[in-house]
Image (cartoon, rainbow over all chains, first blue to last red; front, side):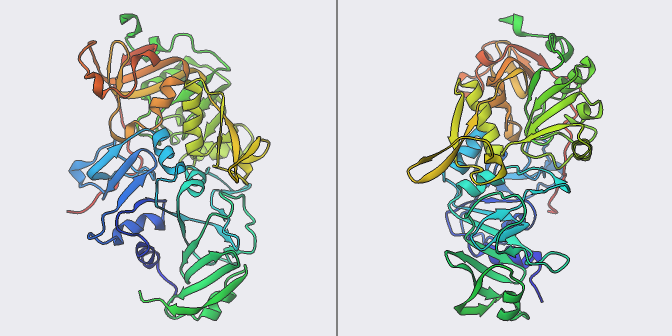
Length: 218
Length: 232
């Protein structure tokens, strides 16, 4: 069975280290917050101007002036701070965020990512994604390995307009954990009930199976 | 100083014209100058350029000005919450310039701070870089982005005094501080309008020098885009 969205999020949460400042994108990345153990001190940054994002509020604590980048109502944790969008992106662009987790439509074997536009079909915009991939110290992508028609989204070259060039180092898909190296994709872990060979087949770009590649324990 | 104080949005927007550039604060529907947007709609100005991170939703925020087709061009980072926008753009009725969110914030900051342009790593190698100057610093490529100023800027603050000093609240701050600096005429609408001296100088986010007009907002809706709650 390929991983569920929750399992992808859970696996990514293992990459979050104690003391990290993390920006989580919309969709699967947002779920990562649910799996970060309380023993780790982690500050979540929301690019609309908050460092120290907490869980959704109780019904009677909803505040229209307190939302995350997905425009959802949220809360703050002790030690939180508010700031302007310019300060927020100074944090991001200036390399002060340890880890960004983003969704993607395509990632290629060089680590370039496309996630903001489908010409003629979807016009929504990049929001903060281009700044995040240009500025974060580490970017992990959470994505489905194939589209609904079964085409690989891990490509030789991205076909959609790029969000960033050669900036992705790790992908957690529903089929496994893949590093992006100078030599293309490297499969590190595969989902239970799929084989490494199946993941290779589902990948259009150049991919190798790591010598110590293992079945995911999830 | 009390010359800055206006009775309502309609009076504070005196002088708005067709073909002008309007900078509008807010992120999604959070911290948007609701009264100013409605007054701009009611003024009937046409062929306007709007600079704002988002375009509101279909029936609220800047969506109101899309409904009436007063906007000729939008400069935004994300417009995905507004179906009217997507439709008008796809039909070629609306011009659109996408700008990465951090670049937009910095372009507004630069515009207000007298910086004509700056280099940023954001967007290198993407469509955003097309036609822009680039330069290598210490082995890394950067693109040149221009500062933005507007004929009018509209911001929303929590508290303001009659000199125009502003204090924002929580994430309703977002783009408002930069936009406040980048308008030839900046109009602030505030939830509480107090006398000069009532705000603690150390707590002021935007000094009053940037604000030309201020009024107390009326009938704020503060609509929530996605209400999400925890159980217990």
